[in-house]
Length: 354
Image (cartoon, rainbow, N blue to C red):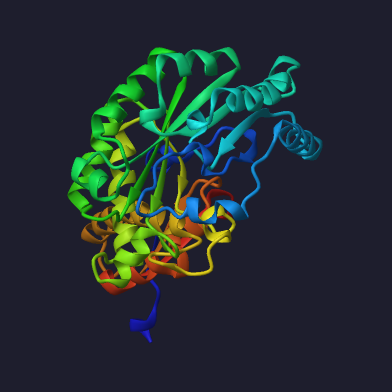
């Protein structure tokens, strides 16, 4: 009977530093999807040109209607940003860019919207382009980097090299825009090393924001053909989680905000494709963040057990703003890991539930 007694210990733990890169501004975003008509390139992982006929290209009235619809929905007094997603905005012809920008900029001028953001390619950035974007109230520019390995960029048919990224990033910052990067894990020829080198190089350019996407293999893409021919093997979910972890772990000592980890089934790429191969996971971000927290959990438990004998139950006390689900991990992966490694029960309580 004595052997079954639970000897528990409470351990306060602060994940604030680890999670600081994931804090989000309290603002509303109005998403406007621009299909890839502005992109003249065709990467191996993309099938937008093959499905472009299935996607309506918005006109300036569609944009105004979308903005009005979203503004009516918003309940709280927060900043609002119009975001042009999906395509290479600055690859559109100038008249189309101006039409789109004017449609959104009217709401900036009348103070219904705080700013505008857009995404594009690094080789579609120029002084002339940035002057135009500045004129129409653009605040944030995200560039699709994907990798800083020239070998990976070449085999992925990105159509640009790492020097294009560095040049574009410096110009964007010189003009005073907020800089964002998008990168992918699991591209052809990409390895853990190339991806760690990619994030280390990009952090030196001082971006404000970062998006990280695992590579999905979608039908009607060259990558899908490579996969069928045995020339490309997509990452397993475990490997994709590990690589995402390596990237966010590198971000800990920077000020970059990680605004997206993974793709949900509501994203354009998954909505428009019936068959997808690869590390498809709607809660990819939760797995990556849970793995990030697990390192600190492991260290704390090891330290406590070295000083306290016969402990078989550990209660972590975390701040009330930290979701318990993140600490225990999806499907309780962190709980199972600790149980297997230390043979102790592992529970989490928020501060107000102590």
